[in-house]
Image (cartoon, rainbow, N blue to C red; front, side, top):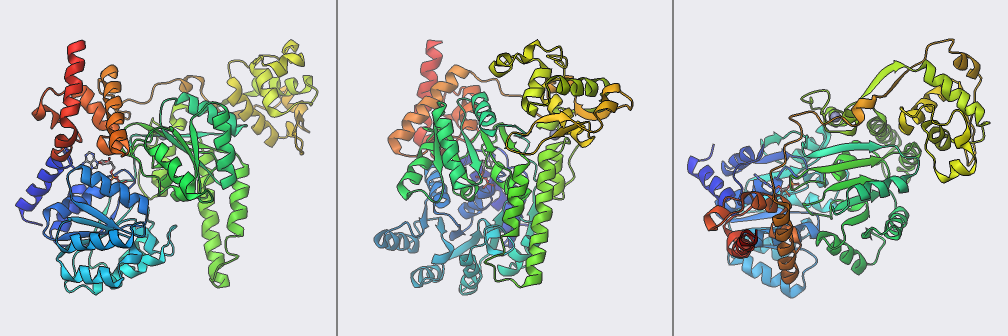
Length: 616
Ligand code: ADP
Ligand code: ZN
């Protein structure tokens, strides 16, 4: 263990520089291990607070900390945030001009910076090596460490230079590796390839209590997405699409319907992409539609929702992407729009994924088999009636606290098995009355008694079957139709417009010869309150004050050309509106206000709060 006073200094830094009262799970242990000089291998989910795990030791230990990071945008954001907290930091990557590059290294050599972010490809360049050999290095940090593994999803050959770089230093500093996703195989690869020596291992729970998980299985994804976005109007979110074309179409669809959305994918011109990201990060465009390949580049803490327009290929990808929501600790929603076609598309992609691979035949087969198994697990998540959070945690080999979390769409729409012999008969007779000439959507809406234009035009609201299952709702009727197709009581035709017709066993079902049982949503569960204890009670916040603080933050952000969350996160503003500090000392008690931020922005926000208090 490090000397107590080192940990005291760490706690003081947490408070004084970053403005937080307590460590989050895992942070303290990682910091203690680093301060004791040990290597670290930490697997912590997105939003767990990995950055502080190395930034705090960087400020406590002597010497400079080198952070290897894969993405220019991530480095820029991190360095910006540090500078705003009063920490001297810089980055070195291909976005610098040769002059800026030289200047940064000169400063670094003179000990101006405590933390330097660097792209892996820069490590072994002569200029960087000569700098690194001439100063005292406190620690080398490897962010997104799974990039070193070929088994990982984002293999980056440059990461293989990290180990030779460390080995070439006159004194080997402690090395710590951080990642949000790592299966056992990837974790072993990280330790082996980075030559971590007896690393202190930390795996904090995968659970993200502030995220609400939801699966929707819509007939029409566009309509469902619009509905979702409208339910979350005024919030900021990401919509992930599987393809570039999907990104463009969906962006246009949203814009046509009055949603301020921007699109983002690798095929777009650099400046368009950069401005899209800026609009999103700066809160001018609340919704960004992007391909999942770019999840890592979008770094913003106040994302209130992540919608997947298509089902990804595995739960690793899904959880990593969905996890970009709610990094500020505020409640956020992760919604997956699922259609069975997603499975076929992914299967196709897996089968063709090896066409340009150098792997030998048998290895290819193993890789494909594994990918198919992962897809199966993903599909199970998308179709299960069980608790979604429990599914995720079990997938990552964690035991959930309880089999039902009370804070996912399955738990809210609890399902139960019951006798639906009568309902099944009504559906079959309804299909007969409609002459087998309509698709599932219309049949379900007629039986549910919904009077839309199409139904009125065709006179379907005059049928005696109209509204005969009103109490079930459209979703349950659709689910029952699916089951009745499996039972052969109904048939669905092939072709562009599949129609529902009576099947070979329609008669038996109509007569109720055999009891029919199905698992369906219980009516009461649909509007039941979430289980107590899971969803944390919201702080009492003065909404009017909060919106003034948000407006002030926006003005400052625009003046200084930085994204708003760099000034204060939403969680901090919320806490500020709750505590309503009247002086500097009280302001320093607000979560997320440290000395650096206090001296930069504290007065402005105190004035705003005082002005507000006087008016009220
Ligand atoms: P990760 O890299 O693990 O995804 P970050 O390091 O970006 O997560 O941290 C996520 C958010 O949590 C940031 O806004 C950060 O300031 C905040 N945070 C980190 N540690 C704490 C803490 N101990 N208390 C409160 N907030 C914290
Ligand atoms: Zn649940």
